[in-house]
Image (tube, rainbow, N blue to C red; front, top):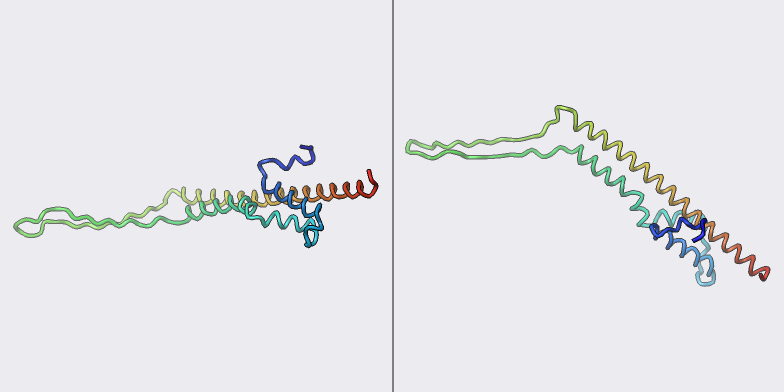
Length: 160
């Protein structure tokens, strides 16, 4: 694999498929009646791809879920118990009702929520970086195809 095309690693099958489709659409213009793709079209297709959207958005969604879980209080627990025996002199039983609720007096929950907000911001930033990397890879693939097409046109024109 040439050095300039090293970004088509097996770990990026979606980009490889996009590149193959791009090559075919440019190399075989008579097969398709659609307009040739522009650089903006290629970037839009790469970013709109469902696999890529998941790859970009999933970490932020997971961090948002963790933050929501930390900000949500647990439901209180209601307990009812009945103890004792009924005797000859009347009812000797005792019924008790209790409600349990967690309270954070130490501030730990608030600090965990602050940490989760920071992780959410980091995940959103990482998603933006991933989108920028995907955009750069798509543009690089697009211009590699354009260069290959220009080279083919030159070969055909000058009969080399």
